[in-house]
Image (cartoon, rainbow, N blue to C red; front, side, top):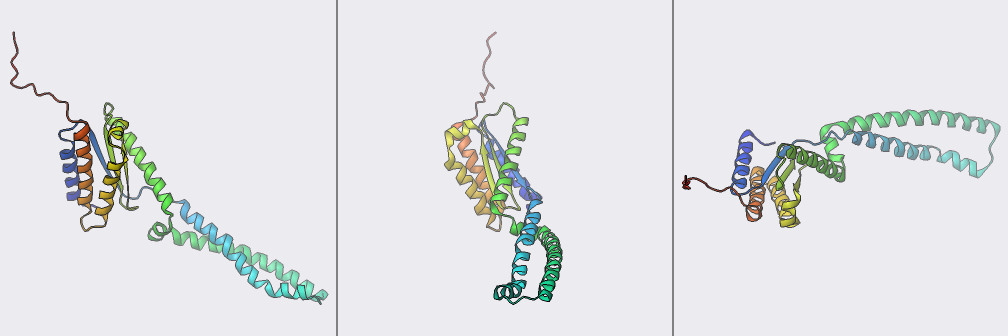
Length: 224
């Protein structure tokens, strides 16, 4: 995770990038964007549905061979019936036990993060980034050139969202550079440097296409 000093560096980078432009840059650093509660349940259900049938199939193979070979007696048929009932009971207990053990094990945070599918992480990161983008616009209503850099630190993923006005001018290439800068920084000892680089890229794009429109009025003579 980033330190308070890292956050100060990022804040300073945003201020420097916005200077000289009429755009807004929002940088959100999130921890884990979701609890992924369905992941342990899915793994537990998969184990409960797949493992017991394999075990039962192996256990009943001798009985199947006997049945195919013929020569069953009434006593053997009665014994087989009892074994089937016992097997069904064991099957149900095994399913419940497997579900509980696997679900509890995969609910451990390090294990859950390892077994959570990447596509699901990507979907949750995109959803969280969109919500932050909408929230940012609720505070800056007049801005049509806002850029959001959303970094999911635990998932180690980055999402870049931009208003239509700036996106129409810049296109996808710049946002790919921004995301790549953050991803490259995550692999380095100083990940904040990658975020600073990404913010600087956004700032250059904003200054190039949407420079500041402030007009300096100081020292302008006013006629009576």
